[in-house]
Image (cartoon, rainbow, N blue to C red; front, side, top):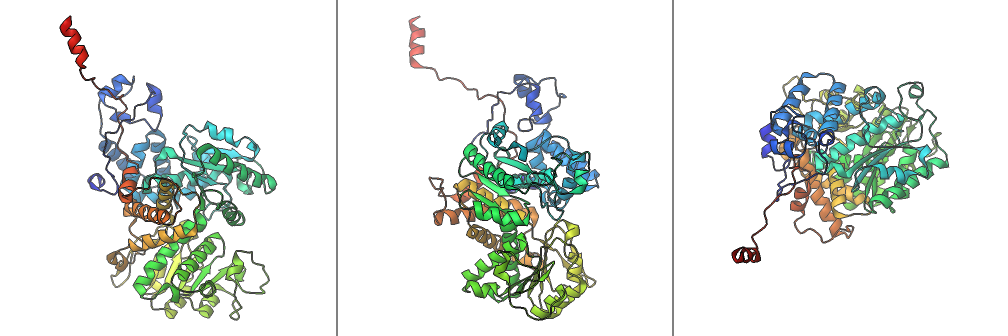
Length: 586
């Protein structure tokens, strides 16, 4: 495992110059700072010059040995939450070692630092709290957000991930406990795409919570008040956006994460033309889902324009995916109206059709159709609409029942079944159910990870995980490096195509619709390169001069987990001729 990391170009981008990171800090503060701490990897010279000699055991260890120790300790643990606490503890003490361990075993550890375990960490945040990460800005701080940003020690922030905690994964309103989500997202910014951690800022906007359990919990760490839904909330968001740009610049990337459905689209519409911003729940989810469909069409041999898609759920994720599918179909020659006719949605109140009792909002209206007949259940919708693909994003659990999966199998030779809700217990079905009931014919993807499935006849399938992590790190890296100021949906369309193109025929034959997560660093870097090429070609980039070798530029910029030398840069002066003459005269 260690050798794999050391020899992989994708995980260890070359650096052409000697890396010096001289720090003015000395003594114990140097060891308490996770950005400068190297543990027992400080050399003898560093220990002596930096004033920490004697504060560590005499042995000087390599990072390889340190990583091996942490990996060994992790393997002793069986409880995912304990693994999460342990990993976050490494991040709090030694940042480069944390990313070394995470990047080296990303396939196994991603479910720990992010979904599904991060959901559990959010629910238990006040009980497992060790050290604060990120900025906590409450609605009581209105008028003073800029001064709070000034308290953050890093001055060169390039990416902000912000949540108000109202819709954390499929878990609902968790208030300020949602901080674990921006922290986890930004960990993946670094591990997957190489965005430097000091350029990342996680933020939670605490405006209260409507979660009764948290309001009664003595360990809850946020405001003990109902969620503020007044104009003061809107003013807080406005002030936050203005303060970030004023502090860090117009091209600072601001990613909205886990806002409630009613606010997610509203803020995206309001800010997308004014700031460099995107909503991962809408656009990132859409991009990874579309990439899965593009991969599925390769397996089926049927173009995207001939598919009919039925969504379970009609919220921000469903609408984001639907809009991007429409854009992709229009690029292939359909009109907007023709593309929308191929997309249906079913939510808690039934099929989105004209004149139904429960009213639809403006975003949903785009996908409202004439009633196809008497549809009372999702199974009825499947049998009536006869979709080639069903996509679950309702977060309501096992609603892709055996009967639904059987119906999809009878309607299609290769049914497409995407159970994208997170965390795992919210998934619409399991991979085993989908493969078993369809006799291995389905093309399956899920939001949370499922293990390989072996059928009774010995055939084995590796389910695809339609995780947004395939998209947002690479897109963010490209946006930051190219100085994009406004992110349009075509950027995510390009990312989808790049991701689908990276899936090999061998991987597709194994049942995968996405490349292995073990290759996520290379996948993200390639997406970053493709998106950079696109934004420069379309005149969307503002950072000049334009890099001629974008591939080399992206890889050279990516964060490297090797330790820097913290010694001052010392050197000898050349012997000046006049000094030599002066000595001769003497």
